[in-house]
Amino acid sequence: MLLSPQLLKIIKLSRNLPASKLITFSFFMLILFIISGCGASKKFEKEESNAIENYNDNSSLIRVLLDERMNLFSYTVEDPVVIKNELKTISHSDKGDILKFYPDGNNVKLEMDGKTYLSKFYQILPETKRSIKVSDKSYKGAFRIASQNNKIQVINTITLEEYIKGVVPMEMPIGKGTENYEVLKAFSICVRTYAIKKLNSKNNFDIYNDVRDQVYGGESSERILSNKAVRETRGLVLTYNNSPAATFYHSTCGGYTEDGTNVFQTKNAPYLQSIKDGDEPYCSISPKYQWKEIYSESDFIHRLKAAELISGPEWKLDKINVNSRFQSGRVNELQITLQNDNGKDKIIKIYGNNIRKIIRSSDNLSILNSTLFDISIDEKNNVVITGKGNGHGVGLCQWGAINLSRMGKDFVYILSHYYPGTKILRYYD
Image (cartoon, rainbow, N blue to C red):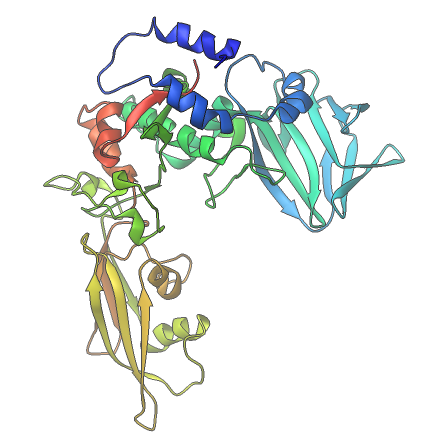
């Protein structure tokens, strides 16, 4: 079997790497069988990598969907840019120029300088600076304007390492001084691993810029300390059996993390098991470690109607029971018994993480913090929920990891605690 020059270079570099506790460099399995399917495609690299200033590292390109709309996307140029279609450069635009993009099936119509163009996609590339400013935010890399199902898509094409810099401070508190530095390094590895598993999507983009994947703020969100954490963990990913791990994370576990199969139906992921977060839970420093929600009877019933579990105005609360819990203590099955004016009972059962989406917070501004709770009906027939934690509970507990960092634990310890049985491998140099 012939090895590529890039692979030979990586293997050669690996011989000079120092040994480090719990960090293993298993290049053959990772690169030949896993990573080869995760890098940017040749077509993708040919179209865009050479056009992105400072594309001089070994990381892949990732395509981040910033916006998707049914109609016009108008862009007012703030710094000189180059406009390309899939074949050639069509314009050099200066400050103040207005570019109007319209969906046309799976093509895009561009109106600019009194001219109209039609193309599969367009690239907007910085001409004099390293970044492009859009809607008061700066983004490194380039922009691709595409269309899918008659929707305009605004996509930021950027190197993987620069993408991570735009995610970490949006998802993890920077803290004071260097107190959170080790968790920022651990989290950088989580973000990188998650992104690698999303590369080479069959869509026009690889990853969303919000909670559907990871919140990404571009260059505008970058911070000095988090950028340093990204640089110091460059190329490192979290793996299980030489494959990139599913690096789920959440805000606050409330004392116990959750088994991944109970939330995401993950298979063959024993590292996403439920674990105890310390004798005194590490995440007890979280503002959402303990919480309470109170609902009037009518408001609670309204949530059930909104979820189309009941209809009609006649229902009253009778009983609420937790029929079963997972090992972590989170509610698996919630049973709600209602009565109408005729004395007829109706039993509703809600399961797992779906409980959070249906009941929601008492102000109805978000889903319920977690399913780690007790529930009762008080003397005024209000529904009272007292709970712990925030989020689905699977994988890394962010506030617990923050506390571990402040206790002096390094990023290797933090990752091994929340993802037991995983290893840190090097994806690229």
